[in-house]
Figure 1: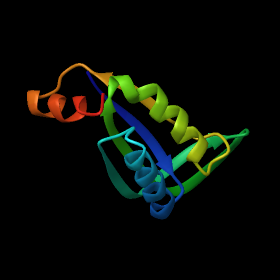
Figure 2: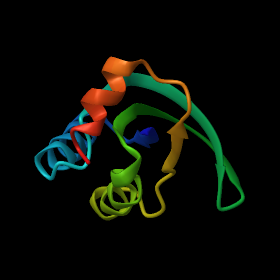
Figure 3: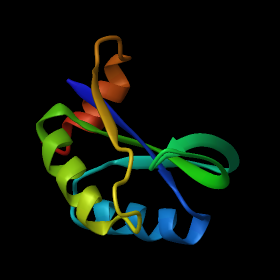
Length: 102
């Protein structure tokens, strides 16, 4: 089964660094960087606004927990938002590609 991980980063450089590490460690097959996203949030009781880079990581379900754990270590934020989930609908070719990570 395929899986996705969604995670914001403070900038494109930090995002690319994490992507490169996870690719090199065979924990993901691909990542899409969506640069300059405006984030409006509440943190420590205060409302804030920031420009971030969102990354969508593509992996196999067997690598999901390890990829999330590694991403948490690599991430520059004190408490990063990292969300991962199993994909129930995937094309056969995508499933074969991501399955090669398993």
